[in-house]
Each structure stands twice: as C-alpha cells, then as structure tokens.
Length: 146
Length: 111
Figure 1 (cartoon, rainbow over the protein chains, first blue to last red):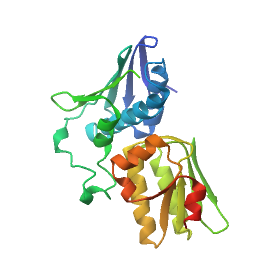
Figure 2 (figure 1 turned 120 degrees about the horizontal axis):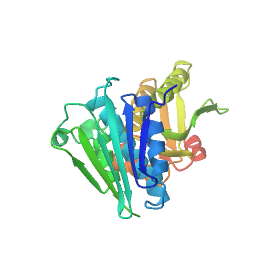
Figure 3 (figure 1 turned 120 degrees about the vertical axis):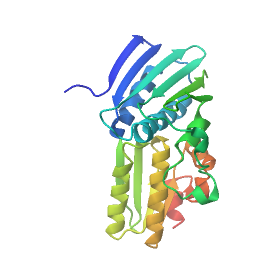
C-alpha cells in the first residue's frame, strides 16, 4: 500500500517537504514525522514536544478542514526548514484562503463554550511568528531556537 | 497511544489520554465518554498525566462533552495537566469552564 504521506528530505536534519491528502486522520502521523525530523537540538525538548507539535497540528487541521474543506482530491503541502536560528514551517492548501483578522476572539465570554474556533488563537501563542500569504491559503510558522 | 477507561468503586469513570488528544482521535474519546454516559455514568475524570499535547479540536471536544455530561446532571473533571497544558487552558480561558485538579486522585476525592 502506498504511504499517503509523501516525504522528500532535501538534506537530512535541514529541509523536508511533505505532501498529504486532506484527511484529518493523518494529522497525528504527519506531526510525528515532522517533529522527529526537527529533533536535532535546535528547539528544547519541551518546545519540540508541545509548541511545535500543537502548532503544526492546528495548521494542518485548518488547511484540511477550512482550506481544502475535506476534499480528498486536494492536498496539503508542508515545507520545513531547520536552521541554527530556528525552525520555519510553511503549510499551504488548495483553498480559496481566508481573512485571519475576521476570526472571532474565542476567549470572549460568549464564545468560550463553543466547540470550534480556537485553532488560530492557540497557534499564535505557541510560535514566535505567524504570517499568512496574501491569499490566505498559506501560513508560515517560525519557532526561534531554544 | 489511545484512551483507557476505568471505573472506580463509586462508579466514577477515569479516562486516561495517552499521547495526544487532537483532531485525528477526538471522535474516539467523544464516543467512549458518550457511551459511558448512555450507560448511566455521570461522573468523569479525564486524566492527562500521560498526554503530550492537545490541539484546539481536543479542547473543543472536552467543552462539548462537559456540556453533555452537565445536561445529564453529571460532571466532567480534568486532572494531571502538565505546565504547558495548564497554560493552554488558561490562555483559552477554559480553566473557567472546568474543574481542574492536580492529580486524578485529587479529582476523585473532590466528587
């Protein structure tokens, strides 16, 4: 059986490309794969265990659910670069994009009991820098070394 | 990796989350708790002692389950959060929705 996660390692320990189908069940495996690749001493074990894994899970889930709208014919592309100064991850989907400034505050009293809507908020708190492309279908996450 | 369910002598169900609670496995947790609720259990402790990370979908499923348990007159408590997970609950202000104990034993004792 073909592995649904298509991986290209450009340089061991440095750059990696991953393409995955729009299937939420694969998020955990994709996160582990990337985290293992990034386990080269740039991030502390704690940040690797928690910040990177959680932020990447959020970005992948958003790309699959809101970007590609679970369309299995569309894929999610991930580019990872591990450098001495930190880890940079770009997650891109085939969707129409969205305006991140229009996401409601999930901590507002009236939103707290909602099941969804916390992903971007959580993500922003876990990494040092978040940037979207103009279209809103690609997110870049940066975690500084340490 | 996965979820374990144990019932104590008082009928309180302790659900252990081993590994992660994320978008890919949240439905499994949801179904297990709903099945127990359907079977008459009203008091739950979700034990995160062995949990590495929780994403927003995992948080969402806990919110939804807590609501369903409360609607049936029960309560769902959380326990065993490490420092990072505790911070996640505080950031999202979900610490205001849940009773959070340091250990499963403390959560059980509080019922």
